[in-house]
Image (cartoon, rainbow over all chains, first blue to last red; front, side, top):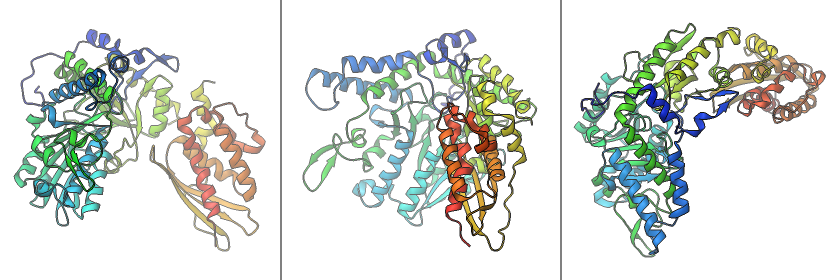
Amino acid sequence: METMTGQPEANVSLSAVEVQRIKADFEILEHQVNGTDVVYLDSGATSQKPRCVYEAEQHYYENANAAVHRGAHTLAVEATEIYEEARETVAKFIGARTNELVWTSNATEALNLISYSISNASLGRGGDAAARFRIGPGDEILTTEIEHHANLIPWQELAFRTGATLRYVPVSEDGSLRYDLIDELVTEKTKLVAFTHVSNVLGTITDTQRFVDAARKVGALTVLDGCQSVPHLPVDVKALDVDFMAFSGHKMLGPTGIGALYGREELLNAMPPFLTGGSMITVVDMEHAEFLPSPQRFEAGTQRIAQTHGLATAVSYLQEIGMDRIAQWEEHLGAMLFDGLSQIEGVRVFGPSDARRIGTVPFEVIGVHPHDVGQYLDSRGIAVRVGHHCAQPLHRALGVTATTRASTYLYNTEDDIQALLDALGSVREYFGV
Amino acid sequence: MNELDQLYQQVILDHSKRRIGSPLVENTEGLLHGESHQHNPICGDQIRVRVELNDQDHFESMSWEGDGCSISMASASVLSEMLPEMTKEEFLDKLEIFREMMRSKGTFEPDEEVLEDAAAFVGVSKFPARVKCAMLAWVAAEAAMFGANK
């Protein structure tokens, strides 16, 4: 196996004993749901948090709370240090330079930041330096049919605002991307290519190189949705060679309310800001303002300081265990899920069988609506996601309106997977199918 | 009965399969017709309900087409069975009682004389995430009724 950076794998997977030890760091996983131990298989929606993460937030509030980048008092200095150290930790984690990491409230905001900054550039903001971000009628934005709505709607809206055309790479019947069409779809008209690193529904890992190579040839910007990859795989933005990447803290053991945007330094410093106001300026008069360079340029207003500290603590926790080892464990759980589900009579698994995937697998129990499947599993303490998972176009392409999705993380055991497989064996009987 | 069995009472599971009132029927000449399409954006469930009323404000029929969980489909089936011959006012009264039951978090004691098979949905009220499923057809019928014309 190779990591996402193409380096040979040095370490071995987590062991079952280690996973038990990890699980003990998560208070909530010791709780009972409906009279039984909770089996949490919904980490694709949001992950649980280890004690150290919320203790870090508490520590910040008890010892260092103040506004950052302003004020000369000791607490303000300490808060600023914590805030900027968190940036350094998270930037390093994805192979970025510190000033290439912009804090946002989540990945959705990060993607909208790019969309609106490009709009502003298209209106002439940012001057000549921002010329490469301008798009308009005749230009094209390319995305894919597997995207989460967060990496689709901001581009639809950008197309509406600028007059550009939105196109997409479709999927095959089994949900795999039509890579064979990329070279046809990426043309001189293409200004931006937005695609996900890992499908939030199918759990499949995208061959990012195919998109990056095609985009580079025509000078299009690349935007990667890292929401489902950064928490589960070793990710190095420089090795991936993308221009932008968005990800969320709450899916990677961090608090809610904090996410980040990675952008190449030269791009971020040339791009006009999205949100404007305090803390992002150098000189202001009544007619206009000069903006700071990245990352402050994109961080208007009082920031989420405790949350950045919580996220950095989560990242340190993940690093101590090792992302390559977590990825291997989840690849194992994912295979166990895919194979186990495929073998249950009356269960249909979605997604290509030969793809590399994380521990995320969508399925349907034939004749039983996903909502009812989810309810039945919940009565046995098993938490899964049901619905369209914010990916209606993909579900339409798969010929369904909703699916049930099981998704793992580093704290999931083989017993968790087995509990799901066992419970699914009796669903159809319960509903009289 | 455990909570899951209270939610999925046999009458609900039966109705979810029988789907009384589905599919949609063509409009009858001379009656008032109303139609409403309702969506539950959380899970993608959807239903199209068509109602027919006579000049005396009595329901003549309800027909529907939908895609959704057993609770939402059973609720539409039950309502289709109840609605004919009811007046607008009777429907609105029952809708209010049904809504109150749904908000009761399991404390409501339904009168089967009034709610008929819809009384079986009392177990749903213990599951806040499912209340919308049970309400979908009722909300659609209400909107269809208010929009009804010749």
